[in-house]
Image (cartoon, rainbow over all chains, first blue to last red; front, side, top):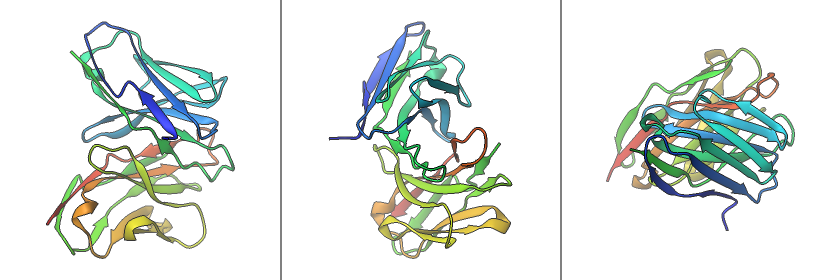
Length: 115
Length: 115
């Protein structure tokens, strides 16, 4: 079984709709992240959470919100989707461990298309 | 804040050619450095990482990278590429002791191998 899962894997929606992307992990990691991937821009950090009660904005948080419901779950919401939010979204986790062991483990991605 | 530059956006090689992908970062303090690979249709996977010690790091599938602190570089190398190395490669940097410790990714280099 995959350690980091994302649902849905693909989603097509219309402008103005509310969308929630879910991420679950069985790795027992404290830290979770949401990224979006766009061609030529690599991965850009949207939000991250170092613990259940900790939420931090990344580079491109505008238009997004997150919820860390439990250590294992971190969901990303688009309150009112717009076409330029069409992208591939990745969830990732990492272990707090020591400060030097921040290797990230990625989910399979969610391909979101906003029409 | 740290940043990462990957100057080669698309590299095309023939099988058995040698590979070097450039990665430069900007940050004056202690850094952790990573190379991730994304095979077509798959999620990112860790190729190798540098935390401390020997600046020449060996990863999976015959890849290696050398950390040159004076040049702020962490270039990825492989002496002889295979068709199966076709993928997108991302360099990433983390400043573990900074107040906003999170991983920043480069924009990626797409590697195409001709059979």
